[in-house]
Length: 161
Image 1: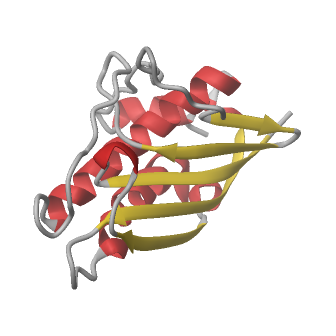
Image 2: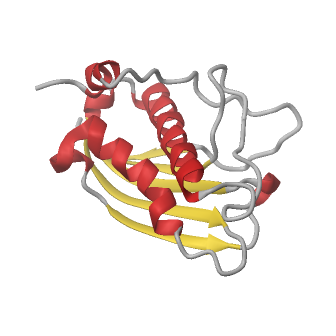
């Protein structure tokens, strides 16, 4: 069986460095919170290869098309994987993806949030396969997110010992 890291390589994908919290930004919570056999990941935006927060910023349906936002959600998936790997070590420790919750800053009457968050979900299934990668999911539209993010994605995974 192929490891998630090997699968990323097969797909031509590279994980960025873990998120670097900007100086002066106070986060009274963890981006990754491991509790027993579960790892919960807080709402993640995208960050660049060096870990610097990189959005996406703006409004989907105005500043981003559905296709462009799908690609951004896929990039957020890589950022989540980078932070999970930094916290738990080997991504093969993930026994299952339980739930994903995507929030999309949406223009009035925009109704394709589910298609945007598919970028994240499709990446997870591509990397982990349908058994481990399968997850429950919600995708909602919101009027605004912290720091002007166009989207944030949070969720939970089950861990192997």
